[in-house]
Length: 62
Image (cartoon, rainbow, N blue to C red):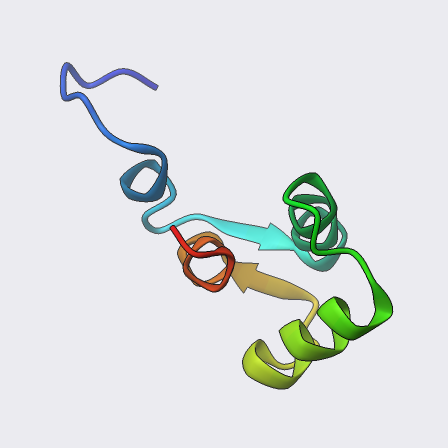
């Protein structure tokens, strides 16, 4: 969606939700896919069916 505003990756995720499967894919894409990484992710954000995309990006360090 283009609204004529230049947005960064983090801002573009505002008000978006993603599935647990997609969140885990993002962790893997960012090389956070060990059992320990996933356990840390769940400890910090809980194990949910859906996540706010910005929460996942924030956890990844964006």
